[in-house]
Length: 413
Image (cartoon, rainbow, N blue to C red; front, side, top):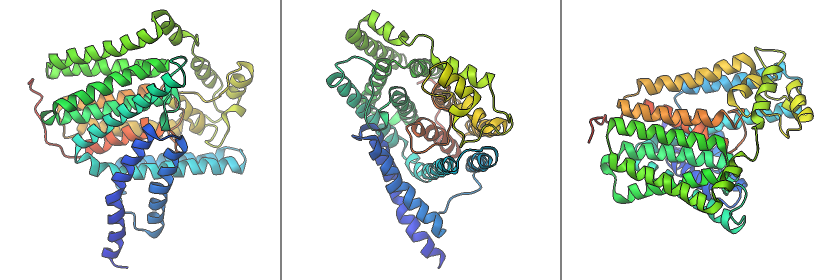
């Protein structure tokens, strides 16, 4: 087979992959059932990529530093679990499938995002539109089916309160950054789109009763306002943003009332996450270097038994990425995770962008860190919502930092 023969099939699919990826993003916000979001990834993206990999037609830069770190983390997690864990083979196959699906996701992102990043204004508008669609659908469901009581959740991949609003926050952060990057081309419609997405994200986050995402959203908005005020002195935009936050908070308080809203936020009392973290740190794996193994059911560990049986908590997952990575893969896996994050931070620092752009990228990175500090326990998992607020923004930051951008002045306008 000639080189041209090898390139034609990949070229045709690679031209379609960004579009298929965008459809997947839309489905994450408005698909009527989560399985549609999952099914699209397998049928439209992972299976074709698997075929191309099997035929040797998948061309990707294997010298990419982040791709190599990701591959090392996946390989270590899989092989290490086979060696250290005495779980059933069914659980080992389960862990192997999670690693393989995560690999396919990483390849999809590495292939689909670069063409999209060539048109940041389009991608920014697209993500903010998804925020609006996802937020509106969640509010409609919350009002029609829940009568504005309980905790808000959406559809598609946004069906779980904490994870759903986490995705909205990440989409908003990336979309706002991309619009800021093309700020000289923005229209009144773009500004309306941005502020509408901000209001809906704030309202949905508050109505979800999720304290971790609420804190993350508050910090990133305040952080961006501070950076924007120092770098550009866009006082009109700052006032409009503040007004959006007040409107969102006012609408929520109007629906709930001040006392009921406060009760919603504190009704769970002391967060069970503190118990989870304490148990996993008090009863670490027997092998500090290698952990329990990814195939091990954490409920069967010493920490899991203390949590699940004695404390009466219905899960043994640490709900913290770093503690969870240590529990499953030990200090070696934790070191690889920190290497992955450090590689991205170094790319941001050395990126061919303005200092202000780097500060905004650090803000997006910080949002991801805040979200994973109280929710997920691993990056290596099957098709789940956590992909959208972990791998997607992290690889976005890496690829954006690797590209050459026209430096725009940081002088106040």
